[in-house]
Image (tube, rainbow, N blue to C red; front, side, top):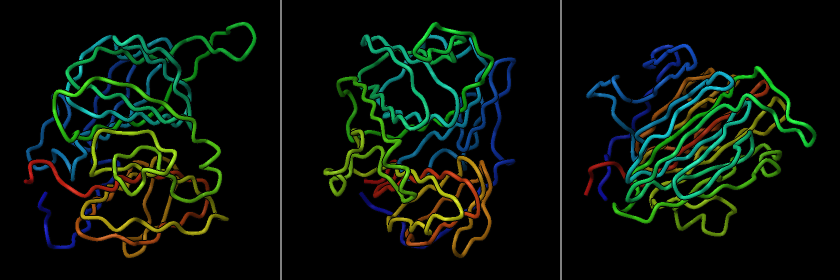
Length: 259
């Protein structure tokens, strides 16, 4: 697939994101989503959706359909209950990477269960669930729907970039969950003041999202929770943190609509 040739870095601040707020949901959209449409902000590379959601306990997204999309969910706090038409049912929590391939079509629901399971009797809680959901375009349409999850919490303890979801051949030996996109990979880093700076990959398209905390990006400066940076034809910048922080980095070697 062809790519743009001019290096470019575009910073998007948290407060400029489109927002959906109802009684049980606080959702912020890095790209056009649902009723929020901006023709100049529909995607970057192969990434179409980067939604940061906070859902109240006992509430959530009722059963709804998806098709021909690779959907990766990353929980930052609390727990999210997933159920789908393939019979998968489970709880997603911080450090557990989850991927759903919508393929020819799948129905699923995502809810913040009002009951906490802690090994003993279930107990009610009032904690919101905070997560980021990301959608990337698969290589082909009409694939068989699928689901995968993987515990990566221990790998994140090292502080460096950890590949948590990938279809790129270069990461085939990693422990990442697999996505049906041979041009994309998601990396996550949990950082603090003692963590050595992490280096962004070199790629035609990168999307950096600050999920929590504050980081400093070489050549850009301070970035805060909810900020994102879209990079084209550049990479290698160092990211450092002075306190607890978490970043999500999509590495992409193609863009939507390019042949």
